[in-house]
Image 1 (tube, rainbow, N blue to C red):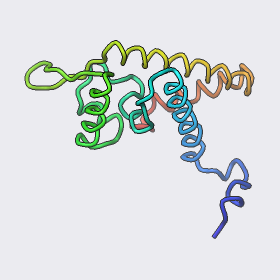
Image 2 (cartoon, rainbow, N blue to C red):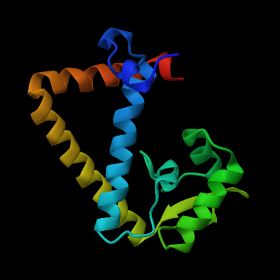
Image 3 (cartoon, helix red, strand yellow):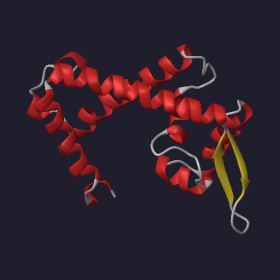
Image 4 (cartoon, one colour):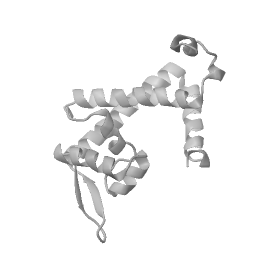
Length: 151
C-alpha cells in the first residue's frame, strides 16, 4: 500500500479529479470560516457551510437546502436551528404549510462578508495562476457546473 507521501508524489495526470477539486474547496471553506470568525461572526463553524453555501439559504425551504448540501432534512434542521439561535436566520411559514428560511440582518452581513472573502481568494488565485490561466480554470469549471456531469 502506498504511503501518503508516495501518493503526493504521483504525476498530475494520475491524481483523481475528486481530490483535485476537494482539496481547494476545503481550503476555501476553512479560510471562509476563519475570516468570518475574525470579522466577528464567531459562532460560525465548518458544518454551517452546508447551509451558507451558494446561493445561500434566504428564501429557500429546508428541504431544498438539505438537497443542495446532500444531507438529510433532520441534519439540516439541526444546522438551521443552530444558525437561528445565533441570529443568522429565521424560519417562517411560506405558501401552504411549507417553512421558508429568511436571513436576518446578521445573516445578510455574513453573506456579504463571504462574498468579499471569496473575491479576495479569486484575486489571489488570479495572481498565482496568471489572468489567462485563471480565466481558463474558471471557464472550465463553469462548463462542468452547467453540464449533466454534476447532476
